[in-house]
Length: 142
Picture 1 (cartoon, helix red, strand yellow):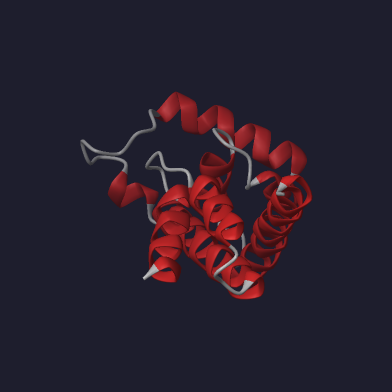
Picture 2 (cartoon, one colour):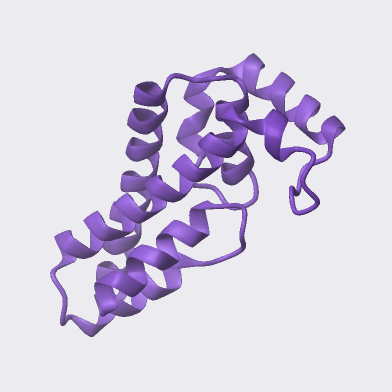
């Protein structure tokens, strides 16, 4: 049940909905009842899949932009598009960051970054972040 909870927390945290998977992952690491590699893998896969949802929304933005629930205004998208084009697909290495990571993955879809490049770069960023978090938690735990 803990792995499934972590998966969904990580997935939700990577979408445009506010959520924190780091707190749950840290708590599970501290409990020392779970395989660390499985925790890392589950969190990474969930978070990458959540980013894929954003990429998909961006890819099909013409359809979704007219929906009332869609959180970005046209001028916000224009600014984000310009910044993303300036720094390129490698800016997706920052996709793990709060606040800017989710819009980056959405804009990658808007600009039709190829799926294989998107998944590769985002996986590297998300996996690295969770690995670092686990190392920090283990380093500070009694």
